[in-house]
Length: 527
Ligand code: GAP
Image (cartoon, rainbow, N blue to C red; front, side, top):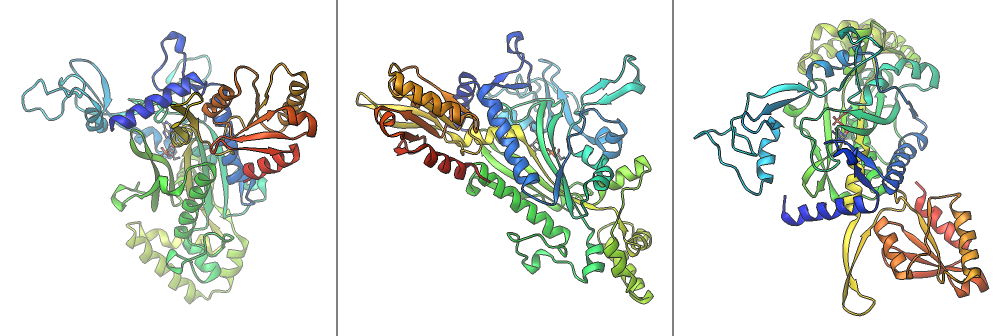
């Protein structure tokens, strides 16, 4: 990490503490590594980020519905999902200083050390990056937090705090399908807390032990069902219009790319310009065995380029696993597919099964599964596949804070140079939308009018009232909070009902009526 980046993160963390965005959890007791609290401005920012995601992903669409499931679920869910057996990081310990660390992060930790330790044992190439001591053999460490349900502390009562919100969506797929009048392709979204007992929580809130996720599981037909129903499967080679309405004949590849583009649109809308992040398409050997594609959207944090969120094409892995472990069918019945298949001759069906058999073999799957899978399809039944855009609330907030933070050199009031610290949040996520002040505090007419404006406006958006200090200082306080507009009621206001609106970024002031201000604000806040 370059020194200047390090100092910009230091300046940001100090602003976040000073202005009430982020505090150490349990600070009066010395804090807890990997746990963070959001203060008055931080929780407004967080709520806005979540609301924006919900509006964009759920309410703004007809094909996505929401879910709010429990954090503790039946432990078999984590067996079926694979988390119990494989959700682990390689952990090592220094035999000398006893520090625990992730074996795969040693090179990063070493690179961050100002004073590089040398190995205590001559020639050792796997040594403690803190003291040079000997490290233990790396061992897998499961990241799930364990707890006990009920009063008896017995292994049979062990449960886990969810390490992702996604699994509840799979576990409730049939209930939501039965009760929401949605038909595949459609999605289920959930936001909420997730917990991971990270070996080394690092980089401020970036890798925490308790955090929030915003996940969508968008269920699609298997390509084979699309082909049987529509006689074709649209792929990216067909150059489909991803900005237009979604289409029934899209294959998984198109749906996946569509959701990558949707996520980029969302990030733009909340204040991350496209040129500030990169798409990393995982290489075939990096993909999980069940995944067909996975894109990480990465952002240049001050501590390096890191994953902000991911969009994975997970095949039918998750629902099939829950079907296997619960014994409950996770298939859907698709009548239009059944009707389309009724028109096929036996020879056409046999040719189709043969084609599927070859496709499965080419993808390293068991070709013998083709017969049963196709019999289900001909009957209008299949286990849906899924595209999963999965984002972290805290990580996105950190990216938005890094992106918004600026120390601007401006002309000082008394001549010379001054530094203005400003958070250039997009108004949609800004914790405070507007601040209202009387120019002269002791002028009762100005104060009365400003107060009336404040009272009216706070019924619509989060506003702040400030009468203390010079007007310039009040503006600066709002700049640090990222408030896009400051409304000042002055002598003219009392005469004609208008007021000045100071724009945070340009620092220009415009005179407006209340109606004009509302129209401008509504436009800036609309999705
Ligand atoms: N269901 C898929 C899933 O959970 P993931 O890549 O492990 O995938 C998705 O997590 C997102 O959740 C990440 O891209 C990140 O934004 C966020 N996230 C994961 N672990 C985190 C942690 N320890 N602290 C903060 N955010 C985290």
